[in-house]
Length: 542
Image (cartoon, rainbow, N blue to C red; front, side):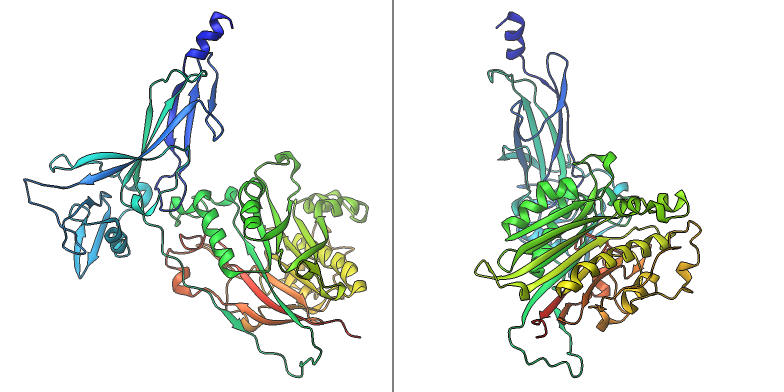
């Protein structure tokens, strides 16, 4: 080793920057730091989990209030017991037993008491406008005592951390591990209690249609969920200014979405707006651990790269209930390009290149890991149709293309079909009429503006017998609830020759939806609402 190489090995890097990415730490939500280091040779890089150039130490600030000569010992506002901690958020008040306490009066005997009182708190400023929490009141005898609680790069606050300030110390270490450099630290705001869970959503029984009794034995039931998860690339404060910043972060939303989805116990799960990197790094491993296997299809915007921050669709199925028989993906761009000669102008083709995709799986029910045979097979499809409301002609073309392909695929094989997804079309749209009535009236308002000629040669009809599984609720429900739009955009359609709806997941009550103005919220981490339908599968006719 040359003298210069030895010197570099002996010299630790310098921590140029260390900060916590979570503006407000929440109980149960991992805190991920951003740490930038610079090496003696001038090179810089961000520290990740596999990096051994920095030693991490997490500490929790333990507050004590043993005495206060100015106005006496402090007591808990909940129990009257001796206080051990104080709320230091300046914009918070608590109403307990009809009395209002400012943060200067808000003392607590324990973390449990703080958590109980939190349901009575009020915040008087927007989070972005609030001053930084006061670390210590010099007029009182509070002593900051730091207790070490972890040595990993990422830390997940626990119940005992609630109400406390956390600190991360980053100590650089030399390449040979013998020397350390100057430690740099970053402190958090007070850890907030985890939000209360939303009310449990129940399954609603759907009455059987008249004269629909089928005496044939061997019917099986299964539940299919459809959920637009709101990809992180779209979850911005500009779009959702009413959502607390911490509730928009992916670190919070990913756990909340997973908890919600698994609580419904679907057998088949169709997801839209699933970001590619998040599916690979988090969702797929977590669902696999919960007993699911899945298939993912990313949108076709190649400029983003195969592992770029692009969203797509996924279908997952419970391994104990189904085996995968076939999987197919439909790229609407590819279909449009293959039919380019059918369009009268290049404008039509350019309008159709919108990167949307569909995913189709054939699943076979299983018993003890063995498939039950062709009679137990079902085709499940999901898609996310183009969003822009100014292009209803693109929407109907995409849905027509998908349905016609599904018709060719399922009808000859007598495959029952479940078609799910975010169709970005309301119940009075041309898309809905096309699916429900097998065709669409040429005088429909949405078909009148097709200057690009997209639909000039389109045959707007199909031969599938489709029903909207949420018909029982009529138009009195929502699947999208934001500050700027409330309505139905998501659906679970099905062919009704062999599939009968037995139950559906109930609507979220209005008080819950508006508790935080709209969605997404600390309770529900998407701007869409999950739909789920239980189907009864009958054998094919003899």
